[in-house]
Length: 93
Image (cartoon, rainbow, N blue to C red; front, side, top):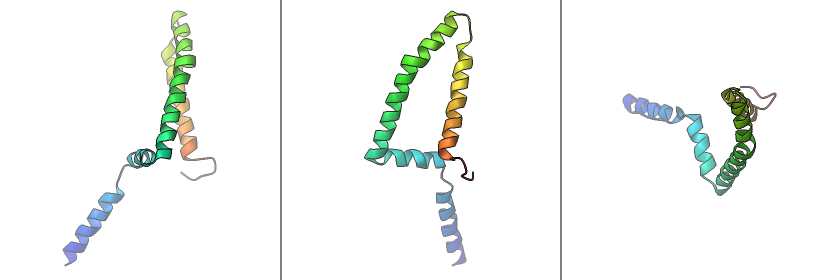
């Protein structure tokens, strides 16, 4: 009888050990509103990359510069923005 309770506790713990990223993606894709948000973000970000970022990267490369450094900087900026969205100022991490 005691073993049965332990098995239930383990099953409950397994459910709690889910990867939060998987949960958040599932929530975003589980509703029409979430899908609209995701599609809108991809469209706007894709346009930004195509129309603004790529031309600058090509100019930098043509001038003998290192466009990868700008890409790395953009990636860091995106990580910072993601952290700010997930943990707004004043919110405990």
